Length: 330
Image 1: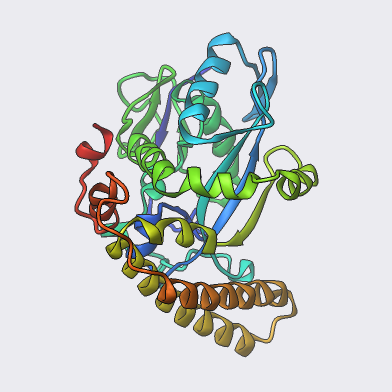
Image 2: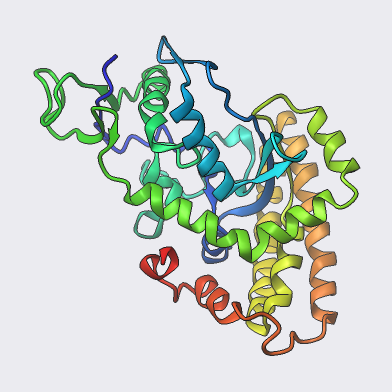
């Protein structure tokens, strides 16, 4: 099987067809552009011998594939159901009307309006940071067909290891070469953010969701493997605000920006008068109501005492964009 792929991106914008996954820091930074939501995803445990079809081919996972998947999941996700159970991925997602079929940052000319400060997931695409490096060739095999269907044809399967083969675009950049990821920087940036924010809010939110366990078990039982729920971001804000006075101020500022953005989004949807927009409008109104209640709760919250958390200065620096990637990964 050929395990060398290159990216021949022509900035067509076809892959920018929905709101991206973001870190909390990125959501705070882009609070006037992306409505934030919390996603709870059921991540099935990989099994030796499991068959994975990708790009018209079938690959059987071996022990090394499973070990790599488990190691990455243990770093980024939470185990649900005890040892041997499935993983639960808590992530933050931009939320918008599906009928729009585009990212909120995509400008009318098809270019990204936040390219200089784009979310880390955008730099990793078409690779998948939630899967180990050794499986990225399988990811690209599947996505090659997807991009062909979209008409982008931007993922090129190559027989050459070091340079584009005859007929390949000369400007195509390496993604995976002989099964090895050519440039891991974007993958690492996204993964490091996920790992850091695990201590910032994911552990606390997971504990709150699984307290007693029944509600989450019932909800997850209705999900197919890989399925997810989208809920209000409020539990995340309530976990972050007590860290420090700065965190509380950032959360309140975020809520104010989000309520204004949601109001504008709903107003635009009502002007479109599309029946298929109604479910999203109802959900956005629910988000707005939850945010309003959270703002009252945060305003009434006593100021967090200094020294409550030893990591508070580092979290403040992260959310304020004063913590660089090298320090984060250290």
